[in-house]
Length: 133
Image (cartoon, rainbow, N blue to C red):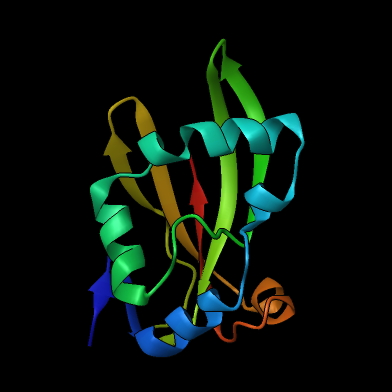
């Protein structure tokens, strides 16, 4: 069974790809606030290759986040964001696990599991993964 960090999961990659094909744009691309415009500008540089590989295995389009939100300005030119991506599948181990931390240059990315509530509103069922960067 596939795993990532503490997570053991099942995923229906084809169903996830099909669901994402029905979504025209991700949350950050549907919003024109300053924070989303900033995230769109830096998105190609902030995700570590390990995180992008996980998205690929799950069938997730990295440009189609379910939600991205600004948490804080850490320093000039440095901001803390959170967000969600959803996939069709399930986590096979229950519990609250600490985030799986990845480092990418000056960017830290914490990956955490989440619920399906936002996913259902976008037509994607089951589980999601959260990011904080």
